[in-house]
Length: 369
Image 1 (cartoon, helix red, strand yellow):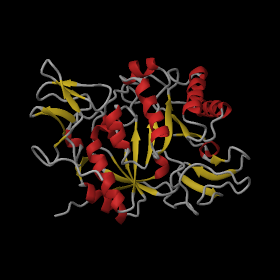
Image 2: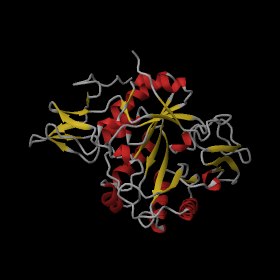
Image 3: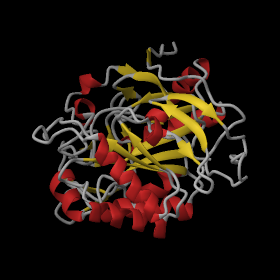
């Protein structure tokens, strides 16, 4: 079993990390993600929370958060992972991508440590999740890749309490840390932002290939349950040809059973010139994906009971009805079987759904003395 993260260097928020290397010119290269930030003493990486101090790369936000909240698991979004149950959600600050359309920019683009007003140790978080009857803890709002040491320690503490861990991530991470990080996760939602290198480079400041590698790794090398989300931006990544190519790649490399969520964009951060995504665009994307052979395709960020419900891909029976995050009709057993044709629906289900509904409840985690 992995030991908890290394002792602090300067204070309770700063710990040593191991994914870095020395360069011949005196700089240190962070090897966590493909960005490979090269740092001189005192400099921070693009993510803001990893920095060079005392001739090594440290994480500056261990144990700190922008806040804690109990959400429905469907909000991550995860539709095939204990539907209807509550998840304790939290994030930190910073991000290793630079998406112009970021919907959580107040946290992911923050350069103020005061954003991280909440504090909790891994054990405190696990006990808080247990106290509030959460089945899962989610690392979300900003990408947990950049605070992976804290996220993994929380996941270890949660495992002791039979609580599962969920990573909501863009999947922008290098091989070795990818292996270690996902070894501690039970589920993930991976944000596949588009299906073109041009989009990733121009709008996100990253590379598509690295994200595709993460998706293939999750499918072929792990038991992590994962779903995919693509935020559709009018005129940028919502064309038929791109959507068809993406769906075909998913079918060929990941299979037909991976749930896909097409969600609506709203103007934000540095992309205020684009209109909000119309519902018809999401429905069109859903049709393209189903016609390509994908079995579980959903629409999100719009009111679409039909597009957000789960149907049997074989007999088309509605198995789980959703109205926003509220569950209605439930016709699936703990083994995930369709009652009409007995095929097994992939995912993690129980005899009856959770009843958390649409509630969003901020909580305060009291520090242990």
